[in-house]
Amino acid sequence: MTPRLSKARLVTSFSFALTLVGAGCNTDPLYRDPQAPRGPVMSAAETVRPGLEANVGLSVVEPQEVDLVEALLTHRSDYYRTLEALRDYYREHGYVTKQAWADYELAGLGKVKTFRYLIDAEVPSDPLRPVNRIPEADALFDKGLEQMRHGGHGVPIFYRESVMVEAADTFRTLIDQYPASDKVDDAAFFLGEIHKEYLKEQEMIAVKWYERAWTWDPHTPHPARFQAAVVCDYRLHDRDRALELYKSVLQDETADLTNVRFSTRRIEELTAANRTTRASLATAP
Image 1 (tube, helix red, strand yellow):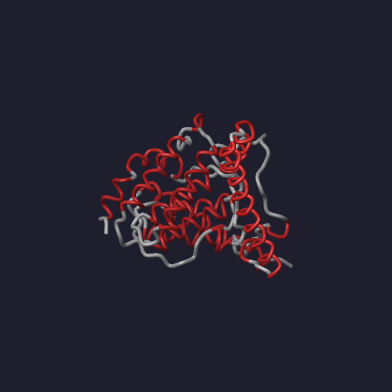
Image 2 (tube, one colour; image 1 turned 90 degrees about the vertical axis):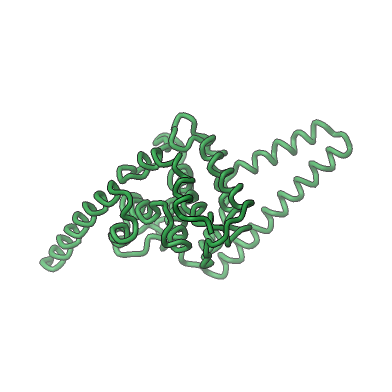
């Protein structure tokens, strides 16, 4: 197994960007134009109310939903394979123009962020244990980091969503193909970063990926608990969950003093707010 210190050094180049992006002040997506079209949003039935689980809209699964999602995934896969076969047919028969059309359509599909819709399919729930150093997984991890750099990670003027989607696919491939790699918790953390900062309305998925980072490796060198706390606090407005996570930062993520100070302050503020709310309810007629 790769020593944890070397894993921490592996992401040194990201430390400054993560300090800016995730040190507690980052409560809104960096690259979201307020005038731009919005991504998928929760319906009224999925809106989080105080005291409810932040992922309430993701946790309810009915048989009809499962059937529809499975049909969607099957048709999506068939569509892609059929389009590839058509492209190959045009290539073999010298139909240059139609081959170009098919190539263009395939390239466009590769830039689309697709969903698996069922949370256990979107974010794997298997209790993975990152124990082995696997060169192929290491190469995928390095590729994912490089794609994030090219996609504008930490540099808004260079942001390209399609490249961030490619980076997410690379990290997900690492986890799917090499579940015993000592990089799975690192890949999960950066999947959280991508879903939090660069893909619209996907904060709930980001929290799930952060959770995987520290459940797969409780000693992960990344501030996964802190990032999840900030998302729950400021974006999902699940303050009970945020309070729980801030407390876990003080217990398990004490290396970053900035995050520790921020967590301490928010624990005090949220605890005081809870006391005020309880007092108001107790005196209400």
